Length: 142
Image 1 (cartoon, helix red, strand yellow):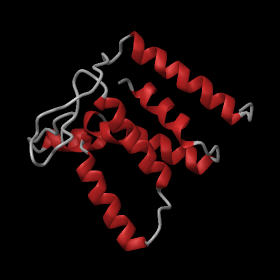
Image 2 (image 1 turned 90 degrees about the vertical axis):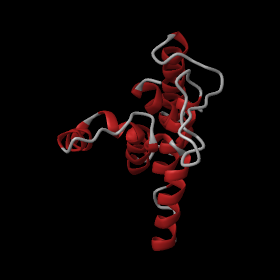
Image 3 (image 1 turned 180 degrees about the horizontal axis):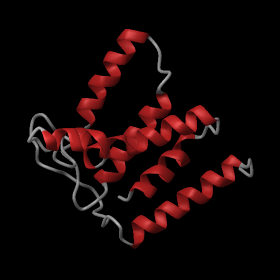
Image 4 (image 1 turned 135 degrees about the horizontal axis):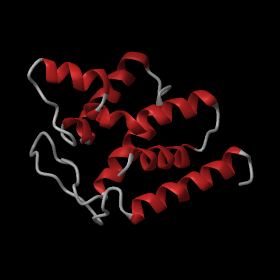
């Protein structure tokens, strides 16, 4: 899915319209793709390593471990919007033809359901659908 679709879907799911929640869910919705842009990607490439897109950062296991450790350390779910954003991203990529390694670390084989094409008509249509309903919620029409 496109980044815009990930963002609008997470905003649609979050429900809260407070600025901190919007910021956390937005960051979480794009976080699994951090391997494709920014400082992390450049740093890994400069060291001769390349994070494979839709690799470890697209598997539910790694986030369950991270969020579990976070909960054990802080005993709260103050980052729940970030969690919603991250798992919404993983879910949407699970619906694409490319799929995700949902059973990692057991296997790196990618699985998918439905089989939407990234950047296709369904992807773009969904992003505007989610944006429309988020705006309705933001301005308290629903």
